Amino acid sequence: MKRLSLLLSAFIFQFSAFAAEQPNILWLTSEDHGPHMGCYGDSFATTPNVDALAAKGMLFKRAWSCGPVCAAARTTIIAGMYPPSTGGEHMRSMTEMPKGTKMYPQFLREAGYYCTNNSKEDYNLKKPEGVWDLSSGNAHWKNRKDGQPFFAIFNETCSHESQLRKRPHVAIHDPAKVRVPAYHPDTPEVRQDWAQYYDQVTLADASAGKRLKELEEAGLAEDTIIFYYADHGSGMPRNKRWPCNSGLQVPMVVYFPPNWKHLAPKEYGAGVKSDRLVSFVDLAPTLLSIIGVQPPEWMQGHAFAGKFQTEPQPFIYGFRGRMDERIDTVRSVTDGRFVYLRNYMPHLSQAQHVTYQFETPTTRVWRKAFDEGKLTPEQSVFWKEPKAAEELYDLQSDPDEVHNLAASSEHAETLAKMRTAQENLALKIRDVGLLPEGEMHQRAEGTTPYDMGHDEKLYPLARILKAAGNASSMKPDAIADLKAGFADTDNAIRYWSAMGILMRGKAGVEAARQELTKAARDSSTYVQVAANWALAKHGNDYDRPAALTKLVNLANWSQHNVFTAMSALNAIGDLGDKAKPIAEQLKTLPAKGESPDGRFAGYVARLLADLNGGNAVYEDAGEPPAKKKKAKGKKQ
Image (cartoon, rainbow, N blue to C red; front, side, top):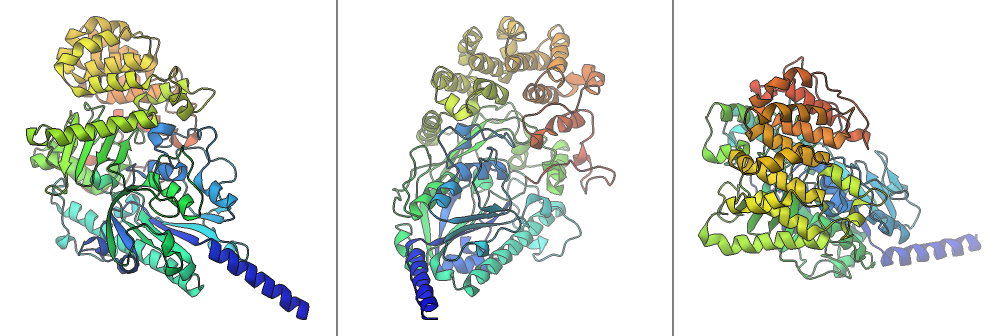
């Protein structure tokens, strides 16, 4: 008995020493909601649990998710790197982790932590072995070994975009009292969706409250550092999927108990609202810093807590790549007051037809009002083509980001500063998102997109960035450089030359018809798509038939890879009535084929359905037609 007592005492001593050395860390996350919470000054919100956590801890007033959709956002967190540098910016792209790197839970496990994820992963990077001790709906810190410190995530999905449109619904908030942002039309459907969004945020807050109570009842609250954050802005259109402030700003509340206050951010204090700019790329290095591990140099974020915390940064950054079936390339920057967006594909509207987004009543009502000419200029911007090459918004005077200041001489200095910040980051992280997605994979064959991007021979970034900048600048005097680019030996330069001519419409095509005609038969299918897109949309009656025929061929999944097929179908979708001569041929194209990963194999089918009239749901302002089958696929 005495021996048992001695062993027990030794174990308790060992456990106490271990616990005192390493804090537990609990992350409470929720989906698809911005800082619409009481602690952020939103009096319409009902969020008592997170408000109470913020009152005893602190919140970050300017936290960005980097990516405005869940897979892109989580990809940023799990690697501690910007997805445009790893090739993981595109939805369900499933690229490889860079050589010699790890996902952050692997570092924590090596330090003795029990790491659990309950339960959604949804990364755009392939997960190596040994990332989590357990990642499932049963994952819980309670399953750890005695005395073992834990890192646990509980992700609440009740606030997800899909839940905003569920009917019937038990209301908590009155739609009549909702604040409708300036970019949305004030209709009953829009008010209902916004009110239901607030209802779901209330449920997410209640879920967080249950997890906090569970921790308290286990006697672990004083040894557990707590983070609460959402994965990106609200699930409403022009929030989710768009890398402006409304799509990227998230609530981020942290609590460091007295035992661990020495690891807190320097400005930490009860009820503090920090001005420090933080984003999801900072979370992995912050975790490592908290447990006393120096973040590796390849992590691109900056620790804002722990032993290795850094000074505040002047900017935080966002991005948009392919959103499900729709291609795009956008980069964004904020200094906390101004938000800058660089649209590398300004010929495409903010509101490309993403099937999943059109299942929300607000999207359909909004589109219908646009088609009928019933919107204000602020409400119309989302749908217009082309969009501005650059956007600049002052959050102080324009929190809804509807008044673009990019052309204002008064703000020229700010615009130049933000543009430089964006380009400097692209060069620093070696942004591979300036390549067509399929081209990126081709160049990375045998290695990873990140490692390919850091090989100047494989990826001459400065030249490609300049070409993309010239193409998307929309400046008429760039045409000479664009024409010269068609003779370049690098596929990406030729691609951006063709895209730049496409963006300039009829005048561009007339100036570079000879170069486009040659590029229509280029060795790169992505150059072919861009050139034939330009000729089909802005060429003459002689140009168009051959270009349409070529685009149909490029869209044939049985003849080309999925990335080429998706690119061609996006081009055809942009042609409108000019694609009518190939309508019957489109109906014969295969909707199935080989894909690098099954999670985005359905995108070609969605594009074809849209072209063949299967997804024009916005024609009905109410719910989707009863006979319409919802597109299969995981929540985004």
